Image 1 (cartoon, helix red, strand yellow):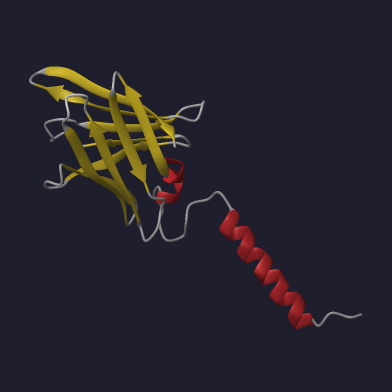
Image 2 (cartoon, rainbow, N blue to C red; image 1 turned 90 degrees about the horizontal axis):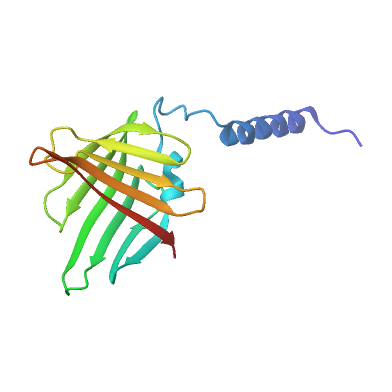
Length: 162
Protein backbone atom coordinates (compact mmCIF):
# COMPACT_ATOMS: atom_id res chain seq x y z
CA UNK A 1 0.00 0.00 0.00
CA UNK A 2 1.47 3.31 -1.07
CA UNK A 3 0.93 6.32 1.26
CA UNK A 4 0.19 9.60 -0.57
CA UNK A 5 2.99 12.19 -0.40
CA UNK A 6 0.65 14.87 1.07
CA UNK A 7 -0.27 12.54 3.96
CA UNK A 8 3.42 11.92 4.70
CA UNK A 9 4.10 15.66 4.77
CA UNK A 10 1.15 16.28 7.13
CA UNK A 11 2.26 13.45 9.44
CA UNK A 12 5.80 14.86 9.51
CA UNK A 13 4.55 18.36 10.33
CA UNK A 14 2.32 16.98 13.11
CA UNK A 15 5.28 15.10 14.56
CA UNK A 16 7.46 18.21 14.51
CA UNK A 17 4.70 20.20 16.21
CA UNK A 18 4.44 17.63 19.03
CA UNK A 19 8.22 17.50 19.37
CA UNK A 20 8.49 21.29 19.54
CA UNK A 21 5.69 21.55 22.12
CA UNK A 22 7.28 18.93 24.36
CA UNK A 23 10.79 20.39 24.29
CA UNK A 24 12.50 21.96 27.30
CA UNK A 25 13.26 25.27 25.65
CA UNK A 26 11.36 28.41 26.58
CA UNK A 27 8.24 29.36 24.70
CA UNK A 28 8.66 31.45 21.58
CA UNK A 29 6.20 33.93 23.14
CA UNK A 30 8.61 34.74 25.98
CA UNK A 31 12.36 34.70 26.49
CA UNK A 32 12.03 34.76 30.28
CA UNK A 33 10.71 32.30 32.85
CA UNK A 34 7.17 31.03 32.39
CA UNK A 35 4.37 30.10 34.76
CA UNK A 36 4.66 26.49 33.64
CA UNK A 37 7.99 26.36 35.48
CA UNK A 38 6.01 26.90 38.71
CA UNK A 39 3.35 24.24 38.08
CA UNK A 40 4.84 22.22 40.98
CA UNK A 41 3.27 24.79 43.36
CA UNK A 42 -0.29 23.84 42.34
CA UNK A 43 -2.38 22.12 44.97
CA UNK A 44 -3.74 22.38 48.49
CA UNK A 45 -0.92 22.55 51.03
CA UNK A 46 -1.38 22.52 54.82
CA UNK A 47 0.42 22.21 58.14
CA UNK A 48 -0.45 22.27 61.80
CA UNK A 49 2.16 23.37 64.34
CA UNK A 50 1.40 23.88 68.03
CA UNK A 51 -2.34 23.99 67.35
CA UNK A 52 -2.11 26.58 64.57
CA UNK A 53 -3.19 25.50 61.11
CA UNK A 54 -1.88 27.15 57.97
CA UNK A 55 -3.10 26.37 54.47
CA UNK A 56 -2.03 27.60 51.07
CA UNK A 57 -3.87 26.74 47.88
CA UNK A 58 -2.52 27.39 44.37
CA UNK A 59 -4.33 26.85 41.10
CA UNK A 60 -2.08 25.72 38.27
CA UNK A 61 -1.00 28.03 35.43
CA UNK A 62 -3.79 29.23 33.16
CA UNK A 63 -4.45 32.42 31.25
CA UNK A 64 -1.04 33.89 32.16
CA UNK A 65 -1.84 33.72 35.90
CA UNK A 66 -1.64 31.41 38.92
CA UNK A 67 -4.13 32.21 41.66
CA UNK A 68 -3.52 31.40 45.31
CA UNK A 69 -4.76 32.04 48.79
CA UNK A 70 -3.40 31.54 52.27
CA UNK A 71 -5.35 31.03 55.49
CA UNK A 72 -4.02 30.87 59.04
CA UNK A 73 -6.15 29.61 61.91
CA UNK A 74 -4.52 30.65 65.18
CA UNK A 75 -5.12 28.79 68.43
CA UNK A 76 -6.30 32.04 70.06
CA UNK A 77 -9.25 32.10 67.64
CA UNK A 78 -7.91 34.72 65.25
CA UNK A 79 -7.73 34.03 61.55
CA UNK A 80 -5.65 35.60 58.83
CA UNK A 81 -5.89 35.32 55.08
CA UNK A 82 -4.12 36.54 51.98
CA UNK A 83 -5.03 36.59 48.30
CA UNK A 84 -2.08 35.71 46.08
CA UNK A 85 -1.29 35.57 42.41
CA UNK A 86 1.69 35.08 40.13
CA UNK A 87 1.32 36.85 36.82
CA UNK A 88 3.12 36.28 33.54
CA UNK A 89 3.96 39.75 32.22
CA UNK A 90 5.82 39.59 28.91
CA UNK A 91 9.25 38.21 29.86
CA UNK A 92 8.80 38.30 33.64
CA UNK A 93 6.89 36.73 36.50
CA UNK A 94 5.45 38.92 39.25
CA UNK A 95 4.17 37.74 42.64
CA UNK A 96 1.27 39.86 43.92
CA UNK A 97 0.11 39.62 47.54
CA UNK A 98 -3.00 41.16 49.11
CA UNK A 99 -2.87 40.39 52.84
CA UNK A 100 -6.29 40.46 54.45
CA UNK A 101 -7.73 41.47 51.07
CA UNK A 102 -6.05 44.89 51.31
CA UNK A 103 -4.09 46.61 48.55
CA UNK A 104 -1.68 44.57 46.48
CA UNK A 105 2.10 44.52 46.85
CA UNK A 106 4.24 43.28 43.96
CA UNK A 107 7.44 41.26 44.17
CA UNK A 108 9.61 40.78 41.08
CA UNK A 109 11.13 37.44 40.18
CA UNK A 110 14.71 37.29 41.50
CA UNK A 111 15.57 33.65 40.81
CA UNK A 112 13.90 30.43 39.69
CA UNK A 113 14.98 26.81 39.37
CA UNK A 114 13.45 23.39 38.86
CA UNK A 115 12.11 23.23 42.43
CA UNK A 116 12.27 26.77 43.84
CA UNK A 117 11.28 30.35 43.13
CA UNK A 118 12.36 33.61 44.78
CA UNK A 119 10.57 36.96 44.51
CA UNK A 120 11.86 40.25 45.93
CA UNK A 121 10.74 43.81 46.61
CA UNK A 122 13.58 45.68 48.38
CA UNK A 123 11.40 48.79 48.82
CA UNK A 124 8.70 46.95 50.80
CA UNK A 125 8.72 47.11 54.60
CA UNK A 126 8.23 43.40 55.35
CA UNK A 127 8.74 41.01 53.76
CA UNK A 128 11.33 41.95 51.19
CA UNK A 129 11.73 38.43 49.82
CA UNK A 130 9.41 35.45 49.35
CA UNK A 131 10.81 32.03 48.55
CA UNK A 132 8.97 28.80 47.77
CA UNK A 133 10.74 25.46 47.47
CA UNK A 134 9.60 21.92 46.79
CA UNK A 135 11.61 19.72 49.15
CA UNK A 136 13.03 16.35 48.19
CA UNK A 137 10.40 14.63 50.36
CA UNK A 138 7.52 16.38 48.55
CA UNK A 139 6.72 19.18 50.99
CA UNK A 140 6.44 22.83 50.01
CA UNK A 141 8.55 25.15 52.13
CA UNK A 142 7.91 28.89 52.16
CA UNK A 143 10.07 31.60 53.70
CA UNK A 144 9.37 35.31 53.88
CA UNK A 145 12.17 37.53 55.15
CA UNK A 146 13.48 41.03 55.32
CA UNK A 147 14.57 43.88 57.49
CA UNK A 148 11.96 44.95 60.03
CA UNK A 149 12.84 47.72 62.47
CA UNK A 150 16.53 47.46 61.59
CA UNK A 151 16.62 43.74 62.39
CA UNK A 152 16.51 40.79 59.98
CA UNK A 153 13.27 38.82 60.43
CA UNK A 154 11.96 35.65 58.81
CA UNK A 155 8.83 33.52 58.94
CA UNK A 156 8.79 29.97 57.58
CA UNK A 157 6.20 27.28 56.84
CA UNK A 158 6.47 23.72 55.61
CA UNK A 159 3.27 22.30 54.12
CA UNK A 160 2.21 18.82 53.11
CA UNK A 161 0.09 18.38 50.00
CA UNK A 162 -3.48 17.47 50.95
